[in-house]
Every structure is written in structure tokens, then in C-alpha cells.
Image 1 (cartoon, rainbow, N blue to C red):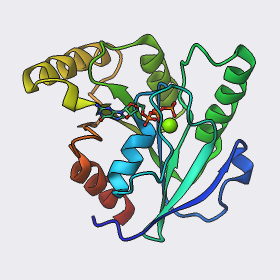
Image 2 (image 1 turned 180 degrees about the vertical axis):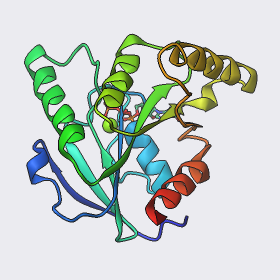
Image 3 (image 1 turned 120 degrees about the vertical axis):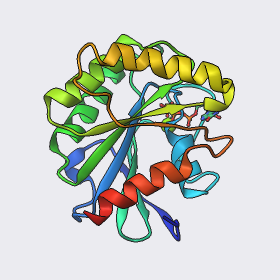
Image 4 (image 1 turned 90 degrees about the vertical axis):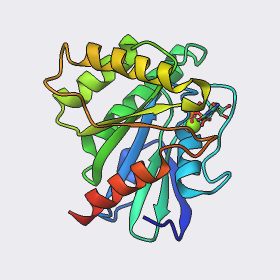
Length: 197
Ligand code: GTP
Ligand code: MG
């Protein structure tokens, strides 16, 4: 799929105020600093459509982007960032869970995990929660540029092993790097296929 246009629509902390249109949408979620906003920029070939930062906790709201005038990408705050105050964390968690529980337009979530880490309880728990709530998701491994191909396979295999302890099949997954443009066509073609259904 070719991205012809990508526009920022709105930011807010209330799912009830998100765009009313029924355009299909795809949301990026994962730990703070995993590369959600960078991935949105990579997919859309826009340098700073979504705001990124080396410091975790950059994205604090639900951000809608309109792509090719007919679907939305959604950038969300990260979970699991220890330095955000407890009360701020609660507010985030509330609107993130409300977003996933209530947003009818959501076609699928992409749960991002840093390919360099062994499976983390917080990510596994979040995937479990999505599964229990019937919310489809794929996994996106990020920062693949940081590892050699052999190590990439090793980490993906470790992830598969852990997930297959609770899931019947391995969820769909993608290997990406926003700095090296890896996985861009795979993710975009996947979205294109879902949009066509
Ligand atoms: P929050 O909004 O704070 O939750 O973070 P985020 O998940 O949106 O992460 P963001 O895209 O802001 O990126 C965090 C840091 O990781 C930045 O310093 C990025 O440059 C870096 N980064 C993101 N993706 C990649 C990647 O594919 N490779 C490398 N090497 N660095 C990356
Ligand atoms: Mg972000």
C-alpha cells in the first residue's frame, strides 16, 4: 500500500471524544519508549508526524492520524513507565483500557515489544487482557536494527515459546526497525488486507 496522505486529526484523553467517523483504525500500544511513535513515522514516511523522544513517557494522549483519507492510525501512551507518578499512571491506564474496550472502529491492535528483551510480564499480561476482551492483536517486534539476524531469531523463538504456554497459536507478528525501515511493507500490506475486508 502506498501512503499518499497522513494528517494529524486530534489528541485527547477521552475515548468518547475520539473521531466519530466509522473509518477502520489501528492502534499502537506497548511499553514506554518501545518505539510506537517512531513506527508511525516510519510507516507513513513522515519524520515527525508523531512526536518521539529518547525519554520514556513522551506520548500522553490518544492521537488520531488520518491516512489516505480513509483509515486511522492511533498513537497511544506507553504503559509500564515507572517515573510517571502513580496518579498519572492510573489516568493513563484508565483511558487506554477504555479506548480498547469501547472503540468500535478498532480493527486490530499492534502490541509493540522491544526485540532485545526476553518476554516481560507486563506485555504478556496486556496481551492476555486483549485476548480475554476479544480484541484482536498482532505483535510488532521493534528495534531489530540493534540485533544480528541470528539473535533476532533467538528472541522471537523465546517469545513464541512463552506465548504458546497460554495461547493455542502464535499471534501474527512482524519484525521491524524504524531507523532502518525494516518491516514497513509487511505491516502496511497487512493493514491493506484488513481494510479490504
Ligand atoms: P512513549 O511515547 O514515551 O511511550 O514512547 P514510544 O513508544 O512512542 O517511543 P518513541 O517512538 O518515542 O521512541 C523512543 C526511543 O527509541 C527514541 O529515542 C527513538 O529514536 C528510539 N527508537 C524507536 N524506534 C527505533 C528503532 O527501530 N531502532 C532504534 N535503534 N531506535 C528506535
Ligand atoms: Mg510515543
